[in-house]
Image (cartoon, rainbow, N blue to C red; front, side, top):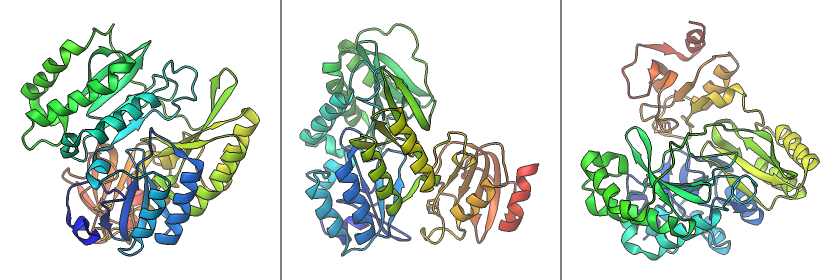
Length: 411
Ligand code: SF4
């Protein structure tokens, strides 16, 4: 498919083989294999971002790295780099359905009894091999959680696999969140998840997500999977802890969590970070769905050095940093749909000390956050529409000028 033809396709998540047009050029999302980018891969992406894009790299909510500012000509340069590092799939369709989030300390955290990267690889292989699955809607996704100290089980994915003891719980996404329908063995987990995806394809009409199937459709998926599953012992509590900085793992191991404001890394920051984490003994970087990175470290001293260096290069290593309570899309000038510079304004608002969650959106599409926030500011003709306890789609209570918006935080 030509780049021009690919760009015409609507309603998909941008990949390297099928990018998406944005206000600052094409954007291409690079998916890691089994949840991690090797340091050489990440370094190549940092370089490619500067050479072929505009040096901006997004950490996405699906735990990918997104390269921005590509041109139709320079895109092929990125594609060559990605192919050289074997980060690319065999086709754009195969790439589009490889939406697998993996718990970011898989294989590092001794409290995870099973290294779920093996499950993730089996899922990746199964998705690649079964071309019938390539017609899955591109937002349909999987989650693989090792049940350890940094869990992604609170994230939404159509099909979730979560280690419980020596077994793997299988979850289906419903309107009210994950429904854990039974357990299977680690060896059978990927096959079970792929089966759920096949049944979804067989039963869906226009629906793009499992949760949109309705009671009857979900009951059908459940009934097909039921003979493959054993019972679960009790509820599975959801862990929403998102630690940053030093993360002691026990058994002498330490990891480090690092975030970037609004999930935006600059190529030079990533390159500096990679040099430090390599010195600390890390072999890869692991993006998380909450738009941060996790790395392993040789020992506590090495982990401390990573924390200090990350702070020095402008990254975030404190989980209570107020900017982490703000979601903001790029807004203008990066996105053509916006009349406000959402991230510049959000940085100013962060300094004003709002206590709740804040969503600053360039327009009503609300790309940065789909769930309600305490305060939502939606750009409209250079001003902000104000929504409280809602989303960008809710009716605004009023409109304020950018300069006035700070007064809202003290009400
Ligand atoms: S919310 Fe609107 S302005 Fe922001 S990135 Fe999405 S489309 Fe662009």
